[in-house]
Length: 141
Image (cartoon, one colour):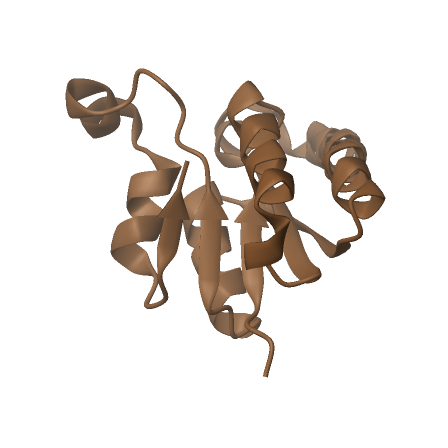
């Protein structure tokens, strides 16, 4: 059975470097992979009036789809077959749900530079959350 691999992505340089590292080590990664992008709706729920939320969510979904397609392209060009998943919610929690629902055996995730310590305590770290929350191995870039 081929292991199910999940790569959470965002619009950052870290995500692009993670994709490049997967391509550079493609002999170690199955052809079929899952790419997930989570639109963080936390601020929308607090700051946007209810009447405008659907409009903001629609725009966020379109942006998320563009991010997924942009980062899927180099993977497809390298022979991978990515399945694109777009979720709305808190990134760490939604990624954990995808891991459980999709029976993922490995998560490959990048960690943004400058993290750790006080920054993680105040703002959180999706990578740290994933490491602590999922039951499968996590490869951290």
